[in-house]
Length: 212
Image (cartoon, rainbow, N blue to C red; front, side):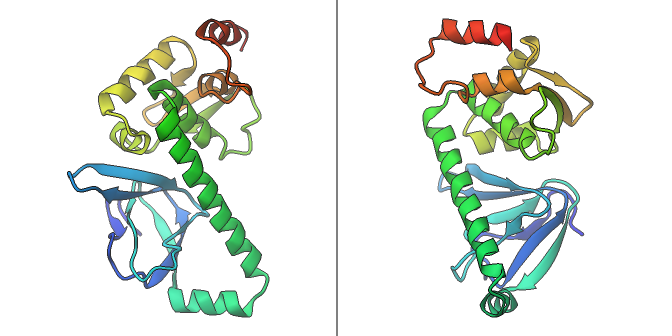
C-alpha cells in the first residue's frame, strides 16, 4: 500500500520489477536540467508501470492517491512471456497503447492551444469510462492542478484560468472537490476532435458550440 506522494521507484533505479496498478492513480515524471518537473503520463488500475527493456527506470513513478500494485520481478516476467505464447500479443498490444499515448501527448504539447490541451485532457479521462458515449458524464480528477499543468506543459495559472473559462461557458461543472461533469460534445469540439479538415474558423466553432 502506498500513500499519496510515495514513490514506487525513482528515475535511475535498477529496473528489477514490473508493476500492475490494482488500485489508485500514479503519475510518471522526469525532472529536467533546470529543475522543472514534466509529467509524461498518468496510470490507472490495469495499467503496467516499469515496462522497459533498459536496465534502469527511465522515469519516477509516484502515487497521486492511496494506491496498490501487483509486483513481478523482471526475470519472472520475461520467463512468463517466453513460456506463454498467449501473453506475447497482450504485451505487444500494451506497448502499442503506450506508443499511441506518447504520440497523442506529443501532438497535444506541440500543436494545441492551452484550451485545446485542457479539453483534450478531460476527454482522455472521460474516454477511460464505458459510459463515454453519453453526452454528459462525471469525471474524477484526483490529481492536482499542478499535476495537470506539468502534464500539459502549462503554468498552474493558465490551467486555473482555462478551467474557470470552461466552467463559465458551461462546458464543465464542478461536482464535489475532485470531480467535474463534462459535456463531451462541446469538449470534443474545443479539443479540435470535431474538426476533421481542421479548417473551421473561430466563428464556425462558436456556431457549432451553440448546437452541442
